[in-house]
Length: 142
Image (cartoon, rainbow, N blue to C red):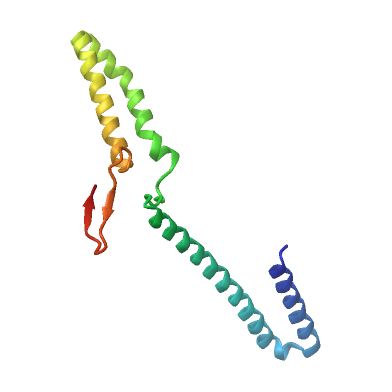
């Protein structure tokens, strides 16, 4: 338990003690006062969290990196490649059966090409090509 939790617990105990001493007629005012302190504590925590996230986003922008998207998960990053490798087995069999070596080669050129396009689409700076913005916000490319 940190110091703020201990402080809040003290406030709750003091509120309960005051309620016992003052009686039920002051209960509403005591509860409102305690809830106001809890509300202030929550507001402070939310404000600190928002400031921290804003600072992190500003650091990402300052470094020129792509900001992480909420959808960037392991499956989003590697799922396409895994699915294409699984599909490569039957596609290779079909290409090799009907087209022999040229058919197999064509199949694998297509698989590699599709994965290459997907990699570039997901990572724009992968090959040193980065999208930059000028001072006025207009896009320009290196």
